Image (cartoon, rainbow, N blue to C red):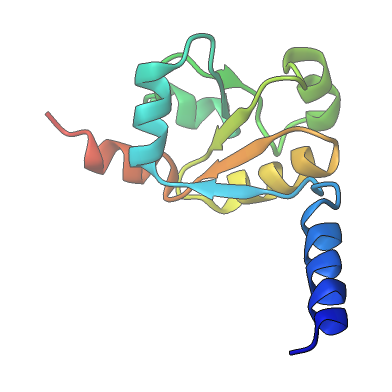
Length: 126
């Protein structure tokens, strides 16, 4: 490869790697969430299930906002700190994926907990 082509390739690689990151939803496992909860203070853990589901148990002490309830977005903006990551779960991962995508578009660093509460309880049985 000649020097000119090499320099152009190098320049393009640098420019493309420096482009601003877009906000996109990210997935984490329940094992990853366990590590976060054990090692971080003031974790924003969001449970987007219904009140009936919350009554059956939750992970640690989540912020509870029912994604199917009234004004989900307004409650999120009111209760969550946009400067901190948000870890989101539901029963099995479907609703939390939607919530994660929505929050990411709103500028949050949002993580969907794969498998949700069902996976959490399965992995954390005594």
